[in-house]
Image (tube, rainbow, N blue to C red):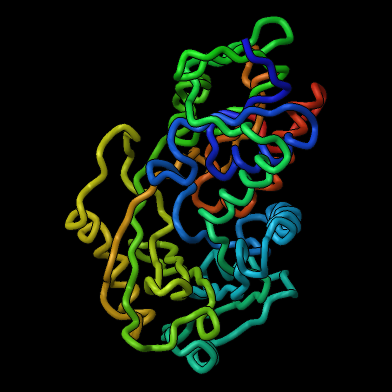
Length: 364
C-alpha cells in the first residue's frame, strides 16, 4: 500500500489549487479520472471572469483579493493566467448589480451614453446605470489548471495520477483510498473536489447539491473592435429570461463569449451532451439579449456546454465529511467560484492539516 500525507481527488481548478497548496507541507498524490482540463466537468475552457468587487456580498471581495495574489504569483508571464480588462456591470434602477454596489467607492459610475462612447460594442437602454471596475478580467481557465499542476510536478514529480477513486474511507486517524485502477493508498487526509460527481464519494451531499447543464455561445463581431483593449468583461442584468448576461471580449480570436448566469436544466453528468442544434436553440434568449445590448456583436458562431454544481442558496460548501473529519471536501463552486480557487484551496489545506480549523462555508 502506498502512503502519502495528503491525497486530492478530482483535479479541476479547486483540486489543482489544493494540491499545489498542500505540496509545500508533505507528500501529495493527486487523482484525476480524466485528463486535467477535460471537457466533461466544470473547470475547462479558455476563460472565466475574475472580478475583485462583488455585488453578491462584500465578504467575497476579500476572498477575491487573496486569490488574486496567487493568480499573479503563478504566472509565467503577464496575462498568461490573468488578463486584466476591467469589468462593466449594468442594469436598471432596481438591479441587484447596481444596488449591491451603492457603497463601493472604488467603482466608476457611467451612464448609457458614456458606456457607448467608451466601449462602442455596448448600447445600453436609457435609464440604465453602469459601473466599471478596472481590477477585473479574464482567468485563462485551462492555463490556470495546467500551471497549478506544473507547480505540483516541479515540487513532487509523479504526484499527479491519471486515475479516479472508487472509495475513500476513514479508519482511526487514517484515510484509505482505493483508486479506479485498484491501487490502495493510505493518507493522513484526503480532499474530494470531484465537482458534478462529488456525491459518489461524499453521499451526505445528496439532496444538497444539484448539477445543471450550462450552454455558452460565441458571437462573431465581423471586424468590429471587440478585443480586450476595446471591450471589458461584462455582466448585464437584463431583468428578463436571461437574467444576468455575462461574457468576454474577443481575446483569443474566437469571438465574443456570452451566456446566462442562471442555472440550466438539471443534468446527469453521465449523459451525452446535446448536439449543436439543440445548444443553439437553448441560446435563443441569450442571442436576443446580445442583439439588443450589443447590436454590433454579430451572429452566433459557436457553442459549447459545461456543468454547474449548485446549492439552493448559491453558496459554497467547504467542510469535513460528517463522521470522517480527515476527509475534506469542497463543492458547489461552479458559476462564480473559479476565481476564488486559491482562497478556497487555502481553506481546504487548513482543514486537512489542522483538526481545529473551520470555514465560513460549513455544511451546517
